[in-house]
Length: 505
Image 1 (cartoon, rainbow, N blue to C red):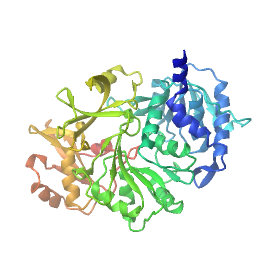
Image 2 (spheres, rainbow, N blue to C red; image 1 turned 180 degrees about the vertical axis):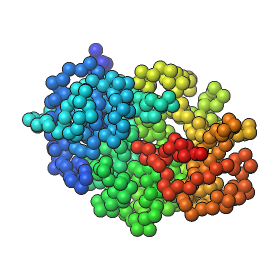
Image 3 (cartoon, one colour; image 1 turned 60 degrees about the vertical axis):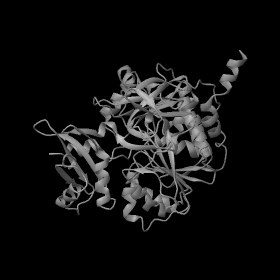
């Protein structure tokens, strides 16, 4: 009995998220800057309390709560109210097609929606308008909810055309926060932290949880603003000290690198995509005092699972012009899957697999996908459940991981297996860092060909092809070239390869 009591008292989600958050809410400090308006922690505490009051009056068939993720105080307060009640949130983006959100509501068996906007998109569903609620008293008591309960379900694109839900537990998030701070991030009440990601993307969780558990201020991006130009203003005007950014964001900022100087930045994380060495080495000059990190992590491993700190003084590790993704965070095990066996031996190329307490319990009610994505393997006499990332990697002699790219971006042409990342690297090298994406497609005869997209209108197709002919075998030369002023991005800030593929004629 005593052991069970001790187990309840050592709840990682409470210890690393809820308790640190509640410790901030009575302080006279700014919690958010939203659309140039500041909100205090006490306002966030009041908003959380009124929403929790309303939740406590509801009956629940499902613990999964739909949350319309607007850029406002009530939305962030709703997350903490949901967590304090032992419930899980399912983000519904207000700018995504309503049909997709209804599909998510159906899949996740959502019975209640929290919404701070005043529209009728969800009139057929049971809904609480959080803007209409009134604060009466603080209601922030922390309950002893088991870490095995869900914290949120994020729906990502599925190969069948239907979104698939990734279930993330309270233990997953708590373990992430513990490991993240053990890396050495020293965030205080004086920090000003960037949150540029949609709340449907998991890096947003790090971007708001890290500051809100340390008493720092979080700066968000309004939905009606052009994200990259707004970030440019925030970095300079508010002297941001900490922020995670996708390389795609840096590409949009690149024309202004000569004008950008952010000496206030102490920590800068690059994530969501592979980080190009040439681009990042230019960006480093804009944040002269920052420690820079390249973080890697699929949603299934809860935000980040490996990291590599970029050293300004030496030549850093890279592959095909992309920085190493480093080593696994504490509490996680990384291995290479090759020919059905796992290994950590240097130089063996295969699929990166991750095990540990940040790994999702599985896809929401999708057993066939779970069977394909998770494997049980023995390491050091212990059986571990590994998530198959779908990324092609190898370990170097120091145990750092080098990333080739997605296994599904490997293609066979004329019997030869090709890494599309190698073609992209050669083009970027030739064009002094101009972004390039290679995509395989099936021609009218049923054969595989390559198309190359270049983010520039000032390049000659013949020049590119002639250069590649001196560097690559003939079967790796793209047959079609397309030039775009800007690459399309998805809601996660990543290059939208599906949209690019749709342009192939």
